[in-house]
Length: 173
Image 1 (tube, rainbow, N blue to C red):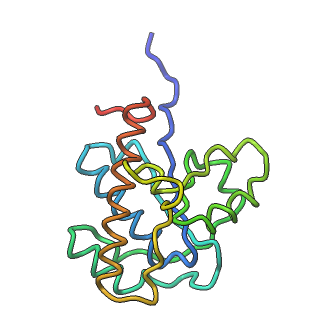
Image 2 (image 1 turned 90 degrees about the horizontal axis):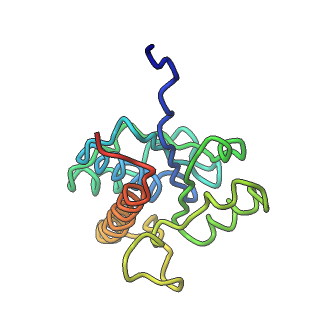
């Protein structure tokens, strides 16, 4: 007899920053690239959002797009969105880019069942402790600031991927 059960749904990750035009779209693009490299793109759905609606519908900041492009990632199709409380139920991991974002997400989740899904990106980076978990906001900076953010995002995304594979949430085909 053939097993007709539905395939398991993809693991779902949402990256969250303030306006969804700099840090979180960079994390989204980097994670997509890493998953492609590992042959895991079909196993994970990645998106991003902001804690505010300031930039809804806007593309990623051009400096973020340039930094991504220069590193081999594509952020050109991004359009900003605002995080919605209902998304907590259908995301497996909600990744905050700084402590303020985490606080706002925790306020949405309360003490409910989705609170354990809320994490800081840099908590997945080896050698980074609780005092240094924020990914700095590059918005008021220049290309070098976006480059530093990209490095932090890449380290954190590699850590997430390694953790999910190690813990069995993702498996290579």
